[in-house]
Image (cartoon, rainbow over the protein chains, first blue to last red):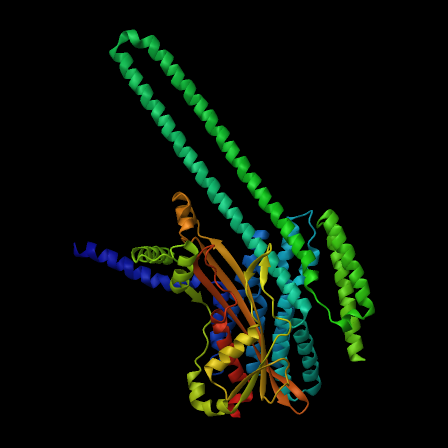
Length: 374
Length: 231
């Protein structure tokens, strides 16, 4: 008796002991990253054991983030993609920071450049996944619209290195880092970056609203099907009860058999019709559900195209920029792009035109930079 | 990480209490505005180090420091819209950082300037914050509202969860003979989840209260990385 009573207690204790193990296994990439930061931010310089643990946590963070990024394909993962992708360059920055604390400048530089490279390849990758999903819809131009996210990583990396070079008395490298920081700062504060952030927000907002509306439609459809199914069960049960009643009446009254057969046939026919109606209703509901989904898809494809055009509407240039030669070319290309999108919507040609416009914007940037430098 | 939406019960209690007290403000959006921000549970992932030992040791030095926050030019009127509807109101995060530092009273003087180098300050900081947010339909609550023939939706019963991932990057500058020089920086990330909101109530993703943990981290890094403690 005593042994039986102690069994649930033992199970509870085991569960409690297992909890930390289970929760450790379920840590998100961000949680692994934050665990690593706890080690590197400790007031004492970490020993080799702590460094190994730090590396292990960061490896777990990046591998888990990579796994999520590989599996979360397409529009479903768009809104959360960059939130996960950020962890990878952040882990490199954490490494660079720790190496600098340990005085390993070479390793810190490598980690810093790795962060820049990872930011370039991982952030905004979801836009390219969208492109793969919509084969007929070229969104290559959108890939360039996460510069504001990449620039933040770059500025952090160059700030870290600049600080190290400054302390080491490396004047040239320090000045070079200053130039990089200045470039990133100018970009992050520019109206172009603001326009891009607004644009990418619209893409992501559209994406999660689309997912939300699709989920709502799915739940509504499932609920309707369930209710219809329950209604059909009630109908069948009622018919069966009626049949049982008739059978009972027929057994009690032998003269009733011909009338019973007629009535039973009528019930059977009604049941058959009921099933046919049920299948018909299910087909109708499914068709309606599919039509809702395709409507949602069409609406949101249109939303993205509209926001693309609006992106460049948002960019306001100063009089000095407007006086530059490349600005006239940019204006011309912008007008051609807007006309095309109005006439034909957003397609591959529009995407190419947008990229062309972007190149003109780069030329304009270079012209302004050269003018400033001279 | 997924939690039972307790606030749906809270919302119901709030609605019943308002009804019993004869409150005429039983319009669903009003109830939501009153009840949810007070009751909705929220989580933060960021854990900033303790500033108290630093303040004990070098609080006097910090009081001598003149610190300015540099605005992001052109940030005003940068609210987010989707299909013509305004989704988020957004102020320049540097103005919010300035207000935060002013309330903390850590430094002798706090200013808000348009460019680094303006004014008579020892240090300049500027930050750039971004939030990637997402909403998730709470299938159970959404279905329940459906089963109630839409009554749940009308009374503002919560049926979605919102989460946001924040990245705040900042740069610290110091006045030098040549002008201003970058002396350090910080990058802070925070994952925030709000359990239970709906069409009547939506988290303010860029509100000062929401960005506060990030500002705390930026301030912590600034005090540690800059020479402000040895002034």
